Image (cartoon, rainbow, N blue to C red; front, side):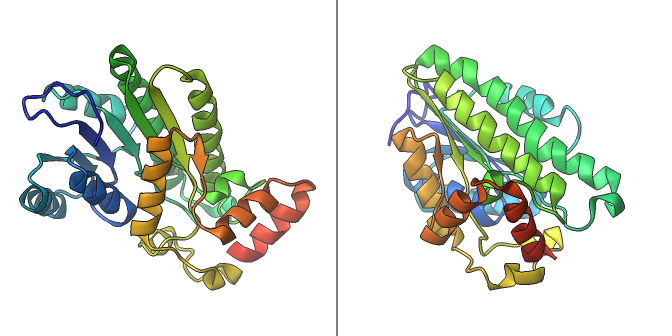
Length: 267
């Protein structure tokens, strides 16, 4: 366990967004096992409160549930102000919250698309910006931004805005990691492929084309891979051999081939 939080508990504190299920819940559980106090952020409050109590009972840490919808404009700033009133210094920021939208962009719901971009891009960027000054002042801290293997692709016909949002997260985090070199603060982009969570069901793409044949990783394994890379100070990590190959091939020109492959996967 690492950290320099000066809270009375003497333990470092991690803020995890999208913490109520799937990958976010795994991040929270593994950090609690490692002795971190937690601030758990998600939209739903009932399960989040129960989950926080379970973590406290099982790991003897503090777990503070914060029900908050980060898909609203300026919500991340509001969240940070609310967290600031509670007093903890954030040692680890896990920007995990994210959603996807499937289908032709011309027929997409504009409100849903805007909410996705607010969550996947703006909230992540704002929370990172708000967390960094305190980490830099201490000379220690970690930021883990959840991107996707989609971030390495030329684009995703059928999930155009989602793929673009994950490309932003990967590019942003890589550049940030270089800016933070030798500061004691690190930034890591976690770029998983399909995970056994409710994400694809919510995105409406769980039965899309060839995508259904791609093996899905367990959330616990993906979370552990991300946390290992974060602690090692790596700028990015792609869990799984097949996903690494997908990322490598997706980044190769000519990009029209990648676009056509992704169109078939998502059709």
